[in-house]
Length: 408
Image 1 (cartoon, rainbow, N blue to C red):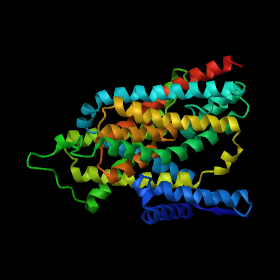
Image 2 (image 1 turned 90 degrees about the vertical axis):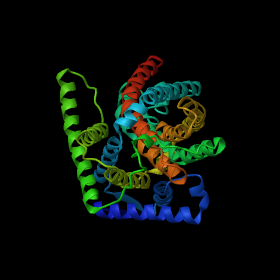
Image 3 (image 1 turned 90 degrees about the horizontal axis):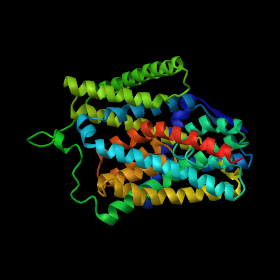
């Protein structure tokens, strides 16, 4: 039996899934204790139920989620760009460089691991590579972009493997991020006496008291829509420029929406039109968009694709999971400062190092809800994961595709 849900039905179910996750976190305190986000909890449960119904031929579901998923995804990235104040840009400069290098190193090692294990087990090198940084650091977007290239180069089955591996990464990234942050914070007592990176922005007589209003909420939504509009214009301009020079290099639209958000924040700061309450409103709208995107993405995953994974691929992905966990816990955390911000950044790195940037933000949010908000981490992680890592990973993937092709 095929059951189809339209746009608004899909949105309504998505919200109900979030509420389900919130309820489950209350019923099972361990979920909150280990910082598993509500959207992840509810989305995963519903996705499992849908998978069971599908494989038993009881029912199949179709969701009209593509358009709204893209919309909320880009709204979220625009809000991340709006969080980039000049103070954070100055404070996070060195950390941005360090974290950019770490993200690239993890991507390289993921490909080395995938190629090494895959070829040792007799897999086609191009297919084995689709269990590396293409679906993990890159997510479903890179899987859809680079897998066809691998197929053309001789990697039969690369597309199916890449999509299934990306799905595995999305799930695992949702589940391990929170525990990583909690473990680091508790082990090193990092939440004691923590001072936020935006502390210098406080007024001399104390913190600015932010309060919500309909005017600010409306303004926040309008700013994010304008930022996304600017982002799409920048996307079209960049694409046309690359075409003019005969290059096929491109950047995804969400990167440009984030750039639009950064421009909006610089204009607000420069004109004095922004205040703490407005920026809080922007953050809240971004959090709503993030929750909807994550819930909808996980709920609509086709988990039965994982059942078709060969033993070799399952082995590679399990090792990748353990490796990413160790890398973020011991390398990312230590090199990013060994402090509270570093712990939250390590949490975020596990999110986009295994799945996608929204996974990073969801797990970081869950950790910060239990401890303290890290504005520095919420600036650095989406900047690297959503922008810089897209560039470096594309170069890394292209290089390894050529290496794998040479191994045939």
